[in-house]
Image 1 (cartoon, rainbow over the protein chains, first blue to last red):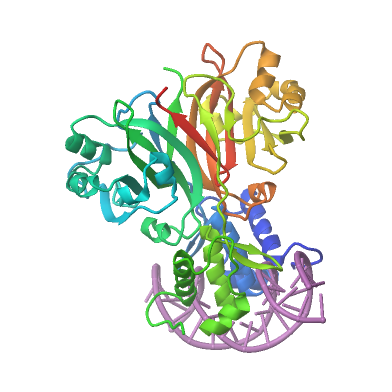
Image 2 (spheres, chains in turn cyan, brown, red, orange):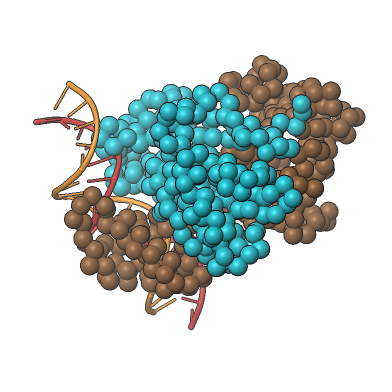
Length: 247
Length: 247
DNA sequence: AAGTGGTCTAGACCACAGC
DNA sequence: CTGTGGTCTAGACCACTTG
């Protein structure tokens, strides 16, 4: 059936073929694809070659592989939208999602603390030596399922002081407000994307390399003194940040 | 050497082991790892198992595999920062990068046009039936290397009108300004992340599943009439959007 | 028990880069 | 030419889910 005349590997030909069959509607959303053995027999290739093709479609987000059950055309779940007001420090409110339930399981759980690395982005952004900084790692799971991994860098002396408040409020800005006695404002925020590494992937329950939305930046006091650098790695398939430019 | 006592597969144990060796500084940035055959012999596993481990590290962004040469600890290239002014329609200016050279190769190349899909995000965002909409796909390559894939949805009648101007200016907002005679403003923009699919991956020169930063939104006329919906898929490892909240 | 995907092995051949 | 990673096969065993 499939043959390798030129330079396109069999597994890629198979992946593209299956993608076209899905695009053509042969398999609708949620429909089961033939099993790996069936595909191997049908296209006269080894099962490992089929698995390589399936891996492509899986990483591309086209299919969902369920162990012991089968592979299915992925049904896209709508992303939760978080509306960001560029001109205020107001707390971001998810749109369409129920407001966080105070009785619910802890929204942000502290994973641990660590010293700051030399030469990292945090050291550069805060313009302070690594020795004076400490790191706090947390896991955000608003509905019980992990959504984001966060790392905060701040003055090492503040870390033990702020930890209890962070555990209680599950919000570093609020915790710092308590401890310092004045509000916390955005200095800047940046958006980029990265792959889930071997540490973040199991925490978020995604495969290694899963695309993550990175939101990072510096928060400061009202007079502009930098307080902390934060780097969130967020399941970008589950959440998006929306900026409205018209009132 | 490695053994599978419990539930952690060999390839994952090996991947974590190599990751730790890299983190510990045994292999610095840019350093070559042992070859697949050497690792297979050293850990007494099959070469395919080594390759599976390498695939994990590759997707995680830890290593870079160069065919015919070897595998190396990845050297992170600094991201280009694009500063976005939330309150103006001013053209985004990359920071640290040279300004686009008008003599340079075309920055944005039109890949093709297509009718709009039913039930897509564009139809919802523009609140118009799919039959009235058309799509333009472009490839953005500011320095010759592909950086982003863009899809624009707009009134089907406008597509042929705006195409020549888009080819010339490489900027849909500018092209529409020419054609319509009034400026184009942001309505809203959103950030999320997604995996490169089988179509975008070869266009961008990245493997399937590579994390992409998605920036999408609606632009409108000064009186708020929606003009087009745009969805950019950007190499999130090469670029980031920065929002400054303090003047 | 039967069927699914997940892991692992042994061995082969190929394409690519550098000497 | 040699060594590297890339592809492919045949066959085996395991873990998981469902009936």
